[in-house]
Amino acid sequence: MASGNDDKQKLIKAVALARKGAWDEAHHMVQSLEGDSTACWIHGVLHKIEGDEVNARYWYERCDHSFDEFSDVSREWAAIEEQLSLDLHQER
Image (cartoon, rainbow, N blue to C red; front, side, top):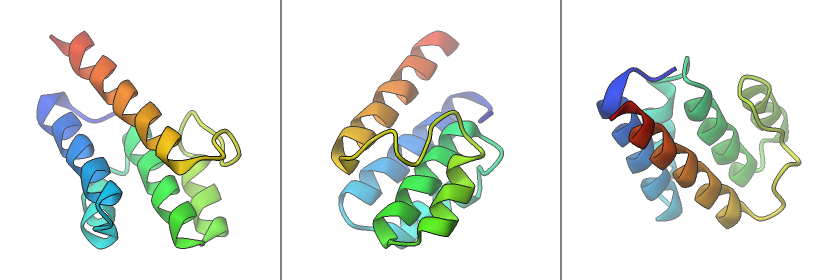
């Protein structure tokens, strides 16, 4: 699990970067937090977008979500942002 507010903010930034098409930057950010379930989820989505299904499925296996749970990536990003927002709220 990401420790603290800073890591959650980093994951929020990674999603924002991914939404803007900055795949490499987003990928680098989530790699640094690979012990966190949400970071693994983001990592999985990034590889799903890239078309690397095998690698994507590996990362989905390390989080609480499945590769096939979302058919629309923009809805998946929204779900991730919602989860991160809830996590930040709970830490307060």
